[in-house]
Length: 140
Image (tube, rainbow, N blue to C red; front, side, top):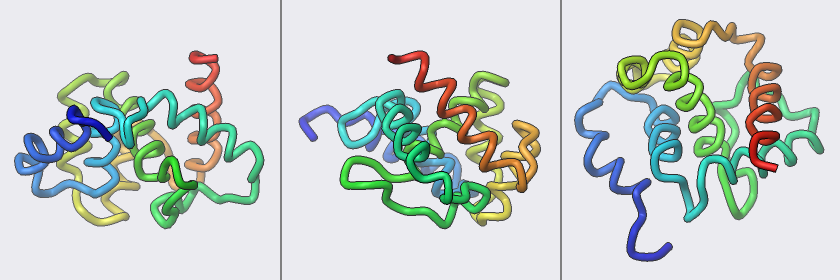
């Protein structure tokens, strides 16, 4: 990946300050700030938006059960990054810190999505697909 990989620098420098974090929150913020696998969050968003348009049967209401999208990206990078981006846009660093401190369990992460962004569990699929489309259009 080259000599400069800010995604991993985030994990080394920031993760220890948030012991009560969910894996997806950590990966999402790291991808928001430093990209992943040598690509920016925007690149991952475009790729995932296209991928999900071709696969309407994928249920994102249980997104934390999803793993690798393909050989280029994984759901935890892009969807975690999208959630981190939306949290940051809504409340800057203070709200992002809340996301990073919201708990280690899947239920805690879903609860944080609801509390911080107003996304109910049964609305995640529609919300994520809409936001991926909106974000990917910014970079065409």
